[in-house]
Image 1: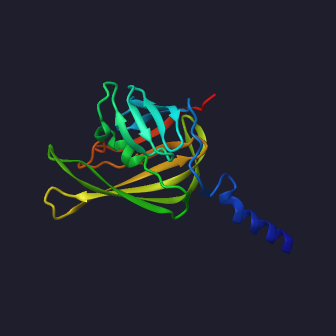
Image 2: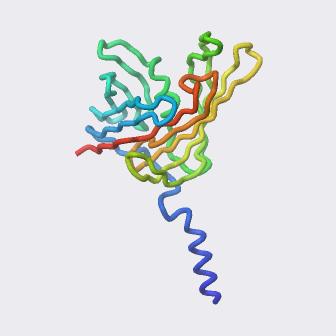
Image 3: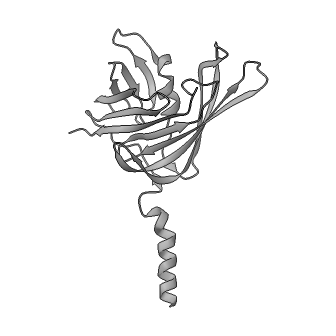
Length: 215
């Protein structure tokens, strides 16, 4: 009887960890040809976008978007710079990738990191340029199902904070993101309606619909 209780306790203890790892030590090895495609499933239904790795250097990765923009990334796949097909610097247009895709390995339960970025803040039809304080925390590991498949992922809570139009108050947006080492990228994201954030003027969600690893 004691053996049965002990075995049951071990199974219960190991259960949450059985499906995947609880720590992602290093950035994945990106290869020329790796390609991802995501699609909005809520808020901007029908719209999709993609990235494809076209060059890998010792300390830098070059990727191309579906619209032929070039993304210069570090080895963690964090965006450093963006150039359009005309050769113009359009890094400011890629606030989404610079804010939402930002990672800091290793990733483990409770890991926290942050960054500050400049960007546009909208309210009552007026745009303000100001700083955004962005913090991240790994809240756990779980299996998620998306159109591209079922993946083990780190659930990352992201919080954006900036001043309101009066300069006296704060506006906060909470975002949930899921990063999977199995596909070397984010597989899912969602955040609630907000009058102050674009594209969060409605509930928003996206997911990975296709991952094509390099051959």
